[in-house]
Length: 215
Image (cartoon, rainbow, N blue to C red; front, top):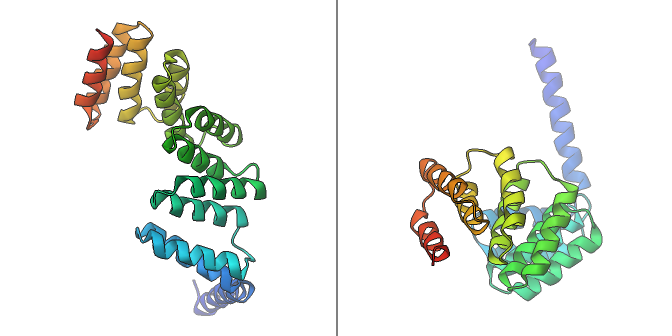
């Protein structure tokens, strides 16, 4: 690339950065700072930044994402009811917000509201059924249905996860339990061995659950 062309590219990039900076608000800045703090595991500081962003107002940062981020902070601080409140506020802003539905489901599950968690996970999948973010969601649905004693539903979701990400070991670990519950011992054994082959780290726990099903 010629020097003059390179200078032109730099000028355009600088202009875009300058425009983004000028078009942002103090609330946007606090929201992005909150995300960085959250990633670092500083949940109380992240919460303060997100609440500051809420107070100052947003221009570019999505309101639905902000409320979900606030909810996630409360989740990490073990305040699950407040987490639920903010995830619901997030979905009031954007009823099709995939992360909001997932996070609400996680909070419900932590609060032992498994039926509500299932509902949230299933709604989330309606909006984003086949991307990488959906794989752990299918696994979560599978494990929840195992807890609820519904192995056929568990198998349905876990096999969808398997189709999307066939090298994920926890899928096979849960499948081994679901197949055993559904009286398919051969498939259970094959799934168990596959989980072990892929390096699943909690094989002892899975074996204990399988042993209980034999009694």
